[in-house]
Structure formats: C-alpha cells, structure tokens
Image 1 (cartoon, rainbow, N blue to C red):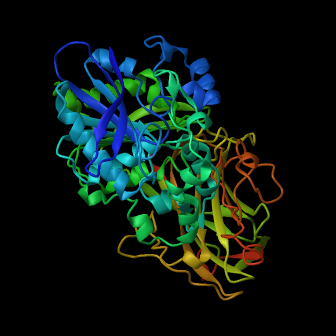
Image 2 (cartoon, one colour):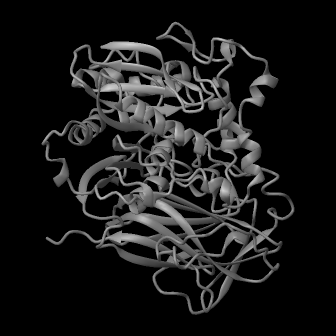
Length: 571
C-alpha cells in the first residue's frame, strides 16, 4: 500500500485542500473511495474517540484480524480493508479544517462545491480508474447527499451510512424544537478543536508525524475570524428558511446509484434522513439497509464490509456479483435482546403494512382499539415526566415502519413542546431497551413537535408521516384544544404475546430516573435520549414552556397512535 500525505487538491478560488491517499502499489488504475469532512484525515480513531475505540475493538476483536488498525480514522473506511482489494482511498480535510486552509463553514454550499471539485480531481489522477465512490458515517454521510445533488460527472456511487439529510428536521430542530447538541456541544468539541490553525491546540496526526490541525498555532481571535459561527447561525434561524435549505440536498437531483444505511435506534440524528433520502432520491438504482447497534459498529463489522464491497464491486469495478438483482430493501428485523433477522423487501414502508390505530383514553391511561365515546382530559406539568398510555398485546406483533401520533391538546400558556416516546415491556414488566446509534438504552421510538409549529403541508404529508413546513409560529390560545400530528421516527421490533406497548406524552426530553428537566447531555446519556437534548433556555423560555398541558381524548377529541403492524406470514 502506497501512502501519500498532504496531497494538494487545488480549488478554483486558489484554496488548497489537503488529502491523504492510500492506493495499491501496482500500476493498474484503481477506483477511488473518497471522504471529506472536518474531523481530521490523520487523527487516529483511538485519539479522537478513545471510549468508542475501546468498546469497538474489545467487543469485536475480529475487526483487527484483517487489519492492523493503524490507519483507522473516526467514521471513515479503513484503507487496509479496501486497498488490498484494488481500491484507492482518499481522505480530504474540508476547507478550513485539519491541514486544509480557508474559511471553515460546515455543510455550506462552498463545502459541497469543494467536494465536487475533489471528486473530479481524483478521477483525473493517473492512478485512478476515473470512477469515484463516496463512503462514510454521519458527517461523512451527510455531506454525500449535498455533493451528489451537484452531480459530479465521475461520481459513480455513494454509501450513505447513518447520515442525516434534512439539516432542519434531522439535525438542528426536531419538530421545530431546537436540539442544542449541535450549537452547544458538537461544534466546539468535534469541529473547532480541529480547525486549521489550531496547531498545538489540536490532536496529533500519528501517520504524518505532526499536528493534525497545524503546522501553525494561531491566536483565538484569528481562528474565530476564519470560521462560521454555526451556533449563532442556528439560533438566529428558528424556522426552516434559506439557511437550512442551502444545507439540505435537493434529492430530486440525486441520481447516482446509492446505498442508504439507517439505524433503527438513531433517534435525534442517525435515522430519519436515511429513510427520506432513499424514499425521495431520484436515483433509478437505490437500496435501503437498516440495522441496529452503535452507529460506528455495523459499518466496520464483517457483514457491513461485505455489503459495502458488493455494492462498490458492482458500481465501481463492474463486477458481475449479482448486486442488481438484490431487492431494494434489506431490513434487520429486531427481537428482544438485540436479536436480528435479515429480511429482504421490495419497498419502504412495506406494502403489506396494516396501519393500526390505538386510541388514547385519558380516563384509564390506556391505548384502546375503539375510540372512547366519552370525552375526558388529563393534565400534566410540562416539565414533569408526562403521562403514559399502555396496551397489552394479545398475540405476537411485529411493528416495522414509521409511526405517527395525532393528539388533541391545550396549554395553559401560548405554546408547548410535545415529546412522544414509545416503549415496549415484556410480560414480566422488563423494558425492552435497544443499543442505539448514540444511546445505550434507547426506547422503541421517539417523536417531537412544538405546538406553534402544528401546521402541516397536506401536499407533502402522508398518513404515516405528517410534514410540517416549520416556516412560522402560530401561538396557541390558552385553554383552546388543537388537533396536532406528530411524526415519530421509524422503528422495528417483534414483540412476544403479553408484551406491553407504552406511549408517553411529555413536555421535556425522555429520561428514565430524571425528575427535573435535564440541562446537559450528560444527564440524559444512558437514560433514553442520548446527547440529543432540547433544553436551550432561549428556545424554551419560561414561563411559556413550563406551564401545564392537557390531553383531550374520546368523543370528538381525536387522539391516537398509528402503528405499522406487519402481518405474520401465512402458513
């Protein structure tokens, strides 16, 4: 394997991007697997995310059986798993990050344009076959949607692994509620620390033997002048306006063959975008794969690598490996205890879904099959744990697909945030929890909506997935009931007979064992919601969001949970 560090990729405006190139030692041109992002092309996985590295390698030692692991970097492919198979791996530090100069502006049109240029540069190199594929997790997946929408001529295929697509709905605002993990924690902790010019303030590049964000160490005022203030921009744009549109790919322009890999428990970032990307991309050749586990885990496991190699083997190398006949949907159906069964399907959501309504009954706190005839109400403190509604399942039941809730609610103030959390319990009362993308004890499903963002777009809404424009706030009249529709992100589980299904409606983030409102991600990690909290005081000012919320059920008050029940196969 030939390794070239800090290879220069010139941009049209004169900025130079730095890349590390890993390629076969022979003379035959190789197809390229490329990634671009701000996390540092040369920062080893164990240096940037040591707990995740230790957990991954201890739990799955087989990952290092075919690789020394010395070239593994967070969320991108391991060259030792690809170069021996005849691929060139190119890692690019995005503009203003790592070893690349320029103005740092994450997910911007400029960054997408740079990605386009880097793809075309790689295709023109003498060691390249002219075919480029993109592959990576999270940021390195999200940026793929944006680059693919620009249609670089030599982009041959993309593998978007757990990558959000809609910058407003998937990333910064869930149901119109600010998710303050990005402005408060992620930007400073994962991006700014690796800004070009951090020098000794950044992390080492063990491969190159220098500083990953060097070689200069610039003063903070100079660094600040050379980066976008992402936290301020997000807070300055509470609605889905041009700022977010510019950072959300036009999926009608994504025509390249794609494999979109989602996580069943990727609530808050690593789920919704892969489903919507697969659903709405214009690509004639597209596949959806859905799995569980931590979001960096399945990407590196042998089964995940085999899937990636088959896909790229066909589209980048032209190998007749039967991939085109692969059904377009591959679902790892979950059972309690994190047991998975691979099932191939032909569409998403599944055509045979029995959309099943369970109606909320405030009088009994139950989920019932028939709407209650008597109208009743139940009121909860918006900052309290909320109200749970339950139903016992008489037979084994598979729930696979997107969910939705319709609620009739009123508030004592002019606004309210609604958090919908679906949980499952075995017959003995033990909760069925899931090892999620960013949460070790994820519930079955989650959804969110701000009452003042309740307006939907009928043309873009589906029965199982309401679409909210989020382009203005419509304050509520205190005490007046409103019917609202809440999108709940997709999930999958086969529940044994006697299991209990629970829907909790609250006015704060779901967190087991937390009596008050969480004020930091550390209070929620391991309790159900991971790092994706919604407690920014400017976004949720008191007393507006600390009043009382009333649920209205029965009679003319429509309140129900819509479930995607998959019928058992006929015997």
